[in-house]
Image (cartoon, rainbow, N blue to C red):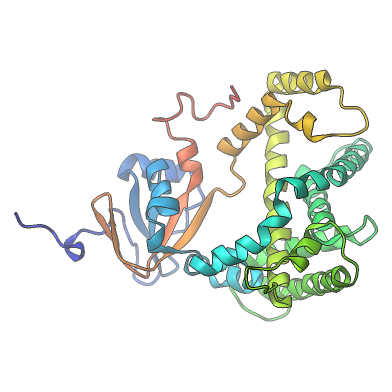
Length: 362
């Protein structure tokens, strides 16, 4: 029986739009994505700003990109060049053995004992911000959460203190992240030029923290990163420490701020959930100090947070570069294309959840 070769397989369904230009960028619009999922199923194609994109939708498609078909994809090649330049040579843009080696060096800073050591600091900062918020009257949750989570991340990662101009550093990160999705024009007054300038200021701050930790080791995450060695006795270079610390500061506060803001919104919209979560906290009688034992006794809050992640994932989608032509669901995806996998579509899949658009922790 004759078999169809890979090159004879059809491209995924969908439209590439106009030559060189493609289609209007609607890839972050959940309603649009759900319509496409219902129309095309687990894979379809589009073109945005001249970039050919295969969109993988649903749990099986996501699993293929992230696990079973991972050999066909590259982290580095998937993200726009703006991400790569602004975040540097961090885990975010490393593949294969390089990614595994660097991740192995970084993980001791996040082992169980290290996290246990961080808890008192996190508790102190959280209590201070709750007291502050109680005096503010009306405020914007996202702005306050970004300051709060940045202070937690910068304190744990670099040992910063409350007087270390946390608000200014948080604003620098906001400027940096604006550069991710803008045209990379480097003039000083452009968003990208301002993002590059913010990056330089942040690297100066990180560099000073690295020098301080070399001279005065502590138990914070940066000290552990400075001291860690691989099997050959090699440490992370200063450039690697800068890039990985910048990434961890970014990842450690941006996504947390987004999730906390979504949590606040969900509690306001679902007062019965808020009441039950408060009752669980009241039973614990935490008092003046949070402990790991307390955290293990919050099953309902854990379910609430997981439901927030399901309905409002802080990172709704991810990109990968296609490094080898392959077949998925009967369609050919060519080398050089970009893979997009919207996580939020799987989280609202009606074949998995009976009421996918209802906030229901239980």
